[in-house]
Length: 427
Image 1 (cartoon, rainbow, N blue to C red):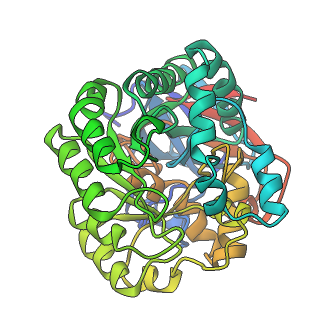
Image 2 (cartoon, one colour):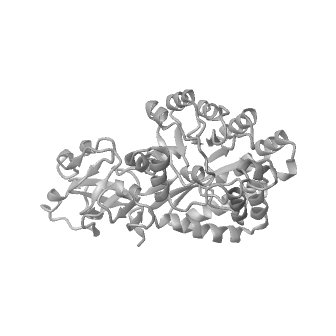
């Protein structure tokens, strides 16, 4: 009982999806008794009859409700769930929310038979967004991104990664990173900003990708360090090769930045294995990942972030090797890849459904992919992604009976309330 002061905000009356592998091993802070008699040994780590005490924005304790009722303690506030589901706040671990303009016309071109690669070679694709993003003011970028991020937050997202990559010069990349960080300061969400300057060859370096990579390494990365926590690169036939990607990652590591990669989306290059062997925290897309690549990711502890929105919008046919990822115990994360070209998606719930229906994930795998494994993809699983003493009190509450219902449904938003650091932010 030493851990309970009476100053906490108490969440009770919820069915709790802890996303912890052994919820029965959690202890009641009132008696040090195991919560095992109230734990449902499912992949969601369900707990019933358990209260959560929150103080200072963190989970301070878990306690049996029946024991809590036998005390004379009063609390700062009690939130009664009335049987609703409480789960960790969702984490969108791969997005491109900051950009100018839109690419609806290119989407129409694809529907009329042009490929993503053909459009890119004609000066469309990423470079068309680069032009619009460079022309936009910082305030314009913020206002447009604010609408997008609000859509995610209303669906229970409490942490989001936002990449740059539509500037491709120092000033524009910094502009995007500043907007990303401002979103985190002005909205109830944690933003992890990632530098993706190696997204495409800048127009000024047309025909000289090596020169552009040198510019990224010598100029953009060193001056972006204070604005980002990771560096990403797009290794693909329409972007950069293995040697160029390796240079970017070597430079990032000199500044102790995390590394991530867009890899094996349109063809197999070996980029995912390269990144994993260099210590990448995640490799993303992965439709053309090989079985040997899966072995490497599993051995190195690199998260596989699957992006069903891009797969769907590009009408791709090659699916990520989910069975091989499972076999090699590679953590699988799910994200929106929200961007103006290949994944104009603003619903992580929808991505969970698509991950199951398109890629063959189980509902529990998809749910883990939006919580604990998404946290691992940002190297934040010590802080967020599950309900555990000491972690941030980032909760999403839902008008559903089980986590699987959230992945099963298409459309609608059954949110009953979103809490960041224990404070209600939406609904």
